[in-house]
Length: 251
Image (cartoon, rainbow, N blue to C red; front, side):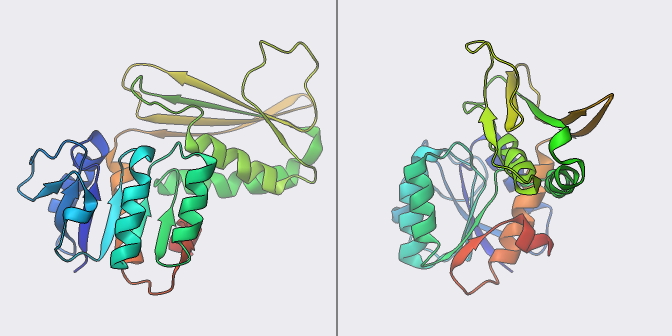
């Protein structure tokens, strides 16, 4: 039975993971990491990961990019695999993740939903099939508390499309400052924030006289918590250091 640390345990996603794990018989929560170490669920919570001296098989992180350095220091120092579910990393932080993955198993995904990851596969295949005659636009909608824009998932979808196209792609995040015709190489990415929207992603292929659309809506946070726990159970059995993702989990 994997012993799991939940980083960001007192946040909305952390609480979703904790509550779903409590309903499972094949996982156990060892402790939590959180900036404010209030105990909400009957296990110890640490503001500094290095203060935890107990046993754990894997970490699930749903916190904030600002916590990455301390989390990776714990993971590498204790040889504990880590599942990174947070988005909004900068280039230096991505380099930190790559370096840590040389020493410990690291699972990284901007979206833990199985449906979203299927959507990415379909997006890549659609780009291959439709080719250069279709323009691609991505629209993502999230709740008003989400800090990063565009979402990590929108960027993952853009990468999937770009991987299926025969030419180099340029990601365009806004159009109001430049008055010019749309270029063939462009993938437009737009963001909306409001209310309590858990997460919606729409991918549009607009071609001559027809439009093809893929859309995914997350109806609750449980879909991400379930995926994170599935990744944690899988990663707990991985012994080789490396950077893993949902393709490795899904096979």
